[in-house]
Length: 422
Image 1 (spheres, rainbow, N blue to C red):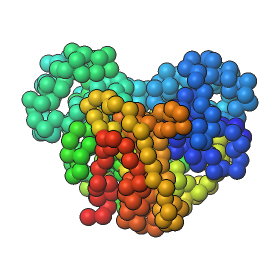
Image 2: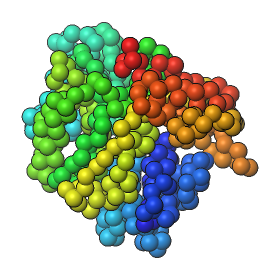
Image 3: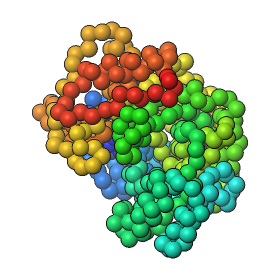
Image 4: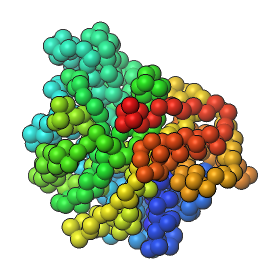
């Protein structure tokens, strides 16, 4: 099987890595990939989706997997399907679940899916009035795609009003913030769950926990994610069943009702409040860095999982996971998330410790390649992943690998998975 992965981050590297280990896969392409993906396959420098689909036809690509939300919201799946190609991901219509937070919140309300009390508006007066009815903290979200940074948790009414004003004026996120969602803050613990869907059937993967804040102890600004671990002990079978019954099944039925059957990854951002799962948001692709820790836990061949999801055959598949834990620690560049940093050469020490060599790996993200050397060029540069029989063992191994990676200005949290270990 020939597979193409669309995207250029650590998520796409992680998908490519498990495909590389899959005996059913003979060739992997990345569009566009990053400086490290040539370790796994061939980078393709085609930006236009029509051209990329023709490339897939000409090169006999059997399966395309879309990583990021941008191409999904722009309709890459529709372009590929129009040419009879097999592609894993939601249509442009279904991708609105992430592309518009207003659409997503209204969808949740329409189909009775548990979510926080909210208002969606482009009127500053209505937003301020709703803010005054809430108790701080207060959540303010830009409607459109903001690369994971369009959510503000305001610690006071005044801070919430400033966030709304800056979004509606276009100052914060341009057109993506010209309509906002203001919602009550839920007090509980946050989880990420991922349902692989084929429009009708689904498979719920193991729950992960992401660490959004830049600094230890969940301090500092929100980021795209500074680390994650899975599976989390904060979820039991009762919560998994509640998520299936109250969130995933009504969502798939609702999207069929909307005329946009959902195929691909439904990423459910959850808050667990007194044992009850409440939907914070939907995304329509794997989280990053959650993908980097979920992929190595997959025992079922990745090509089979993605292909059957893309061809509406999930009901014929039994998915298995390794009885292990995975912890991923993100290494970022010096000035992340405030501004771009100068490129810095990445040096990875030769690993002589067999335990570390066998149970850890790097998923590369914001890197470029020049003269055979890798350079840190993105905000989040790479993810050090550790696998173990316990969360502590996986965490310790991930941090051992972090100690083997060097570049100027490297930045990382030192407390990933602390919720599960305290």
